[in-house]
Length: 292
Length: 292
Image 1 (cartoon, rainbow over the protein chains, first blue to last red):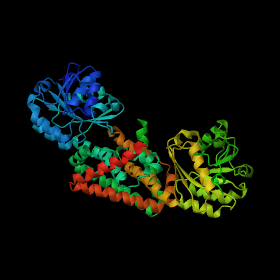
Image 2: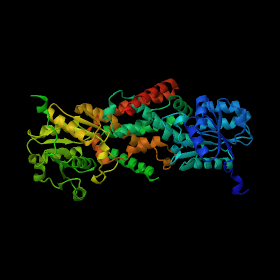
Image 3: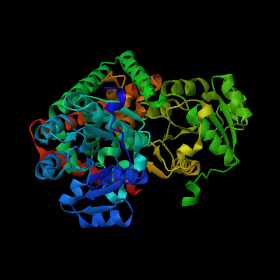
Image 4: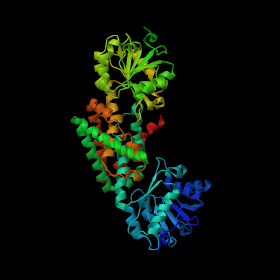
């Protein structure tokens, strides 16, 4: 078999189904419609479907798991929260077209990917992905494919995935506009996401809740605004993500507390050179982020 | 005495001296020149003075504490780091014009204001101020008065200050373009700045130093970028600021660690409703910042 045989190139003849047309699902839909795909959707609220059809975001949609719509899809993008997502697969996979590829946008992987792959029909394939983009607003009305440009996209395969599905998922990320496509195992993904995404949200929330001075807004510079932007948080979604990634997140919280505690000790003990070394290291490391 | 007598209105005939023509001093100079003031400067490096004169940022300048330049000033703006600042006053206050008003841009107050006021000539007045604006770049070459627009400015008087000087300092902040002018005591200022500014820098540095994965940049979304923007830090300046505000900062670090530890406990113990309450509180509080 040569390289060409591996590759299931995405083409515009593929019909796409988006399940859960929120901020992320809606942004996928907009990008894929622009690229010329047929895009259908299943979402809970009739207003969402109507809005999306009226605004040319999807071709057709339903609030129920319409077997005809599901069976027409070559590529399914799951835009649901993790727990509902697994349940939806259990309830509706009998309608899938043989050979369907399913991907997702979920922010936790270990507690989702193995379960979905273990229950999935053998003639369907689930290849997990995490588009590292988001906003503090919700719903298809706020969806915006521009948030993908310049952002990171992580493909999260397991031993069960085919080379073809992995390549297709990478191609999808590139077509959506993501700048950097990486491949990580579910365990690597959860560890890193526990650090860069979940730990930062825990910090932002704690920073915002530990002081009840209502006039803070009059005294602050950009620093506090930056560190608390993500303190506006969807409590249903993020508590679910935290619970589903509990052990890696607890490890990252502990590592941060240890580092922060060490810095506190330097300050308390007058170890100015120790503080300055940490500051120089942080300055050097932060510069990596500006080079790209 | 009526209200009018209290008010030392700033007028364009006042000559301004900026001591320390860095990012902040340079930005003051640009704004005050635009407003029509005569602006002179004393700064350490000849290149700085040459650049500022060549670019119309100041009228005249010197690298030494030229008595003639100092004696011509009605308003002195100290743009130096705190320790050098106090020493400069000690060394050069004999040249001040009687009745001079001195203000500053220093980020700590309790450990500076009382000392300066106690050593200052009785015919001069120091009224402290903290312009809550900044950048991660340095030097007069990067100065930019636009950073003042929409930002906060805090006037920090003591019992020794006159009503007139306080009003003048507030007027100065408004003329520079600051959106919100507040008045706080040195103790209130240091406590709040320990929280909104210094604690956030400690968090950003610790977040950046606690993980040495060089590929983080490929896996991150905007959250981590936001929380670490200020991890690019001037280690000389910030370690001095931390040391000079040690007790308030340690208190704020402890309060944050306690709150963060409580959140960790909720996650560890499966107290989802507790986490969600914290998230809803942080969301509600963060919304204050978007209203203004």
